[in-house]
Image (tube, rainbow, N blue to C red; front, top):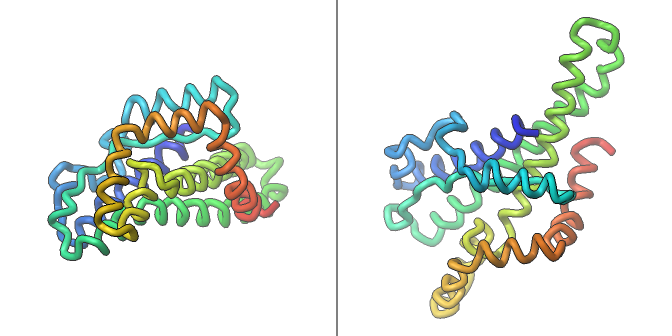
Length: 208
C-alpha cells in the first residue's frame, strides 16, 4: 500500500503547485515543491500516523495526505478562477492516476496467465497488486478531498460559488475542519458517504 499511497499524495500536491505556477504564483516552485520526490511532501501525521490509525482500527478506507503545497492565491492572475483550478488540480491528478492504474491493472491481469509459470510471473503479480491499491487509494483521496469541509479542496471550490458574506462565514469553519473530519471518521459517517460513491467507481476501474 505504501508505494501507491506515497505516489498519490505526492502527485496530488505537485498538481496544485504546478497549476498555481502556470497561473502566476511561483511560491511552490521557490519552495522546491514542484518535484515528484515524496520526501519533499511527506507529513508525519497525514502520511504515516493517520494511515496507520485507520489500518489498525479496522477502517474499510485507508487514506492519507501530504504537506500542503504553499500557494499565494493573491499572485494568481484570475483570483476566483485560479482558486477553482488550483484546488481542482490535485483531485483531477488523482482521478487520472486511478484511471491509468485501472487500465494497466486490467491489461496485466488479462495477461497474467501467460506469465504465471515464468520468472516474471511474481513481478507481474506484485505490479497487479500495486496497481489495484493505486486505483483504490487515488479514488479515495480524490473523493475525500472533494468533501466541502475546510481545509479540503472541495471547500475552496465550493466557497467560490458562495456570495462574499457567506464565504467569509464559511471560512471561519477552517480551524475546526480537522475535528469535523475526525468526528465523521470516528462515527463511520464519512466511510458510508465515501463508499457509496467510491465502491462503484473502483469496481468499474478494476473491471469487476
